[in-house]
Image (cartoon, rainbow, N blue to C red; front, side):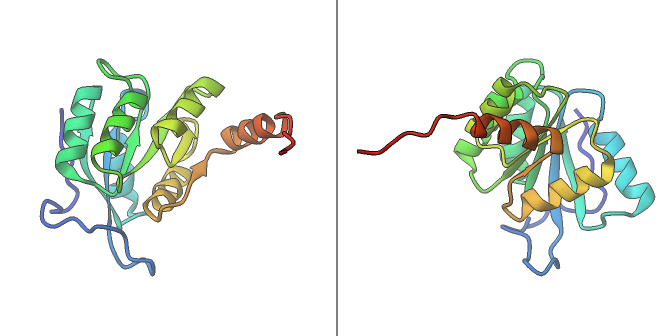
Length: 172
């Protein structure tokens, strides 16, 4: 496992980002797949597009994800779903049980109703598909750090269709 530090962020991590945007966002990248934390960190560093986002950790398995998340107490975790050992949904559940202030943003290739709803039930604040461009991921990380819920357009469309298809119930 590699720990990525773009700046020295090991001292006092902020509890929540400043509402006016003055506080840095500390993100742990817990992903096993095509878009790696190292690629995302390189993108941020090389282009200087998000100086307020610092990548402070990386994990390749569910067990590492939980350990790193609890040790680093980052503002946002970019979580993959398919990881060796514990999957990303269970890792999300365990992380948020222990530290509910952390925002989890799922970044995955899986877009089935089952995985989307499982991630939401586990407490994820957002769900993005890996085909999102880097700017969309940066925007989503910032939104999750502010406590917002965020979904890629394809996932939002699925959610709307799901809830629109529910039969209304009549209260007695």
